[in-house]
Length: 334
Ligand code: SAM
Ligand code: SF4
Image (cartoon, rainbow, N blue to C red; front, side, top):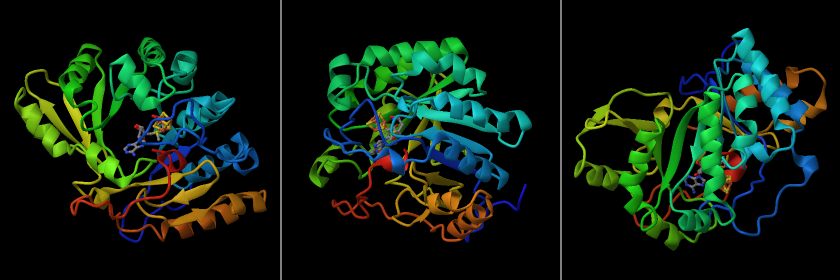
């Protein structure tokens, strides 16, 4: 083990999110355009390179790895990588290995993921209506995702549903989705839509459903208790007293959560983004490929962390989208 990664604002970086592919079998409207051009294969880190990269981070103090994308489960032979990361769980160097998925392929991999040491999975799902699901994901089919959720739960994986809050789209399903999660014993987190993807500014402002407004609506039905617990991430939680459910809210736009940020993001081409909302990144692929040893890579990682910015600049408050990112979420990994 080497010295832990600490950024200029004294935040310990122990959480790495890794995008293993920019590809996806869906085309969610807030994330991708319909005619996406994907990266040439040679630009992607190979599974062996991803292993080397992540293992270096683990050696440098990363305790939690979240695998994402694009859709991580469409990457060929991705289970080889999960198995490889499982060895860090076995050694105790890594505390958690998890993934964020659209669920479409989960029925094929749920058991294997469990066998690799994965215990929790985040599944993105914004609606329980088949037609609306097909509209928002463009290419997705709800029944496949439900099949994936069934398989995950059967395999023993704890499921958390991530739903993007979209005005005029799933507002009317708020209570239905909450009840469905309660019945299936799944956690639920709502995410405010961020200024990314392909929709024009105007559309995205139209779709912006503030989670403050959502709380107000929830108070019409439930007694909400704000919970002080933090999981090191951006989510804030409330408990619905009537059901005992804990609901998470990720509000990158109405609340700045940067002060407790413990994470960095690695893209599938080996770029390290220190902040989801800033363009600044470090290329780790070059030092990785330059030598067989990891010394250059370690230097590049330390140097990158020493540039981690204090926070991001998203702001909808002036009715324009300031700090808008040109990058797609599928590129940085959500
Ligand atoms: N394909 C996987 C999935 O959908 O879960 C993993 C990658 S996806 C980019 C990760 C998360 O980012 C998903 O929960 C998705 O809903 C979210 N996301 C994508 N674009 C977003 C946006 N513009 N605003 C907020 N969340 C977004
Ligand atoms: Fe694919 Fe996930 Fe983006 Fe949807 S949100 S297009 S499932 S990467």
